[in-house]
Amino acid sequence: MSGDGSWVRLDGKARPAGSGRLSPKGLADLKAALAAADFPRLPRVSTGRGTVYDGFTYAFVHGGREVAAADGSIPAGLRPVLAALPPFEAD
Picture 1 (cartoon, rainbow, N blue to C red):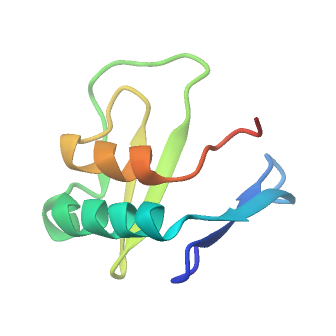
Picture 2: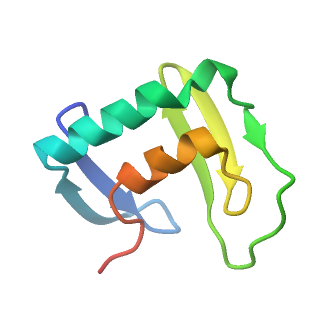
């Protein structure tokens, strides 16, 4: 995602599969969620809350720090970030 809210969705082979731009409110919501997530205190890899078959694994990158989490183990601080992102699947 770019600083202006534009984004590109990639498919399983890292090919462009959709694009768009967050509304100004959507971008403000995402920025607020990122600020509240407290990335420096999050574990780099979040595990241990169960397996979700056919779930996603996410890599959140913000402020030079990357945090990986799978469905079922997303830290509470990252849930609002995930909710503020555009959909991962085409409508």
